[in-house]
Length: 120
Image 1 (tube, helix red, strand yellow):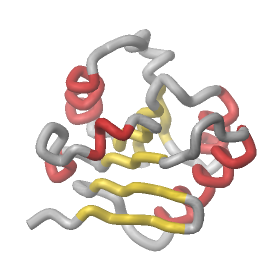
Image 2 (image 1 turned 45 degrees about the vertical axis):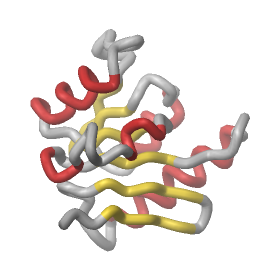
Image 3 (image 1 turned 90 degrees about the vertical axis):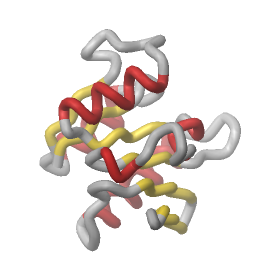
Image 4 (image 1 turned 120 degrees about the horizontal axis):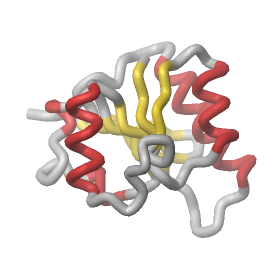
């Protein structure tokens, strides 16, 4: 699957995705750091990539309709999470992808929980 990692993910997260066999691009690699959320959303749409982000703004389905995308995954973490917790949530997300597809959906991944936004 094709993913775009938002700017708040580092090389260890990138490696987890690539080691799982996914095609991954990052906001950093493409020098999109500091771009507006709308710009990131549009780039993901044009590249047909699922956006993986820590930014809760992307959970606003009125601003960023998931049905027009390859999917949006918002990873919910507590303030100042450890790297191991973040990696745990990423692995939880990747495991969920083996059971169902994210295409055209918003997923919110929390510790031990996956919420899938259903469009009408």
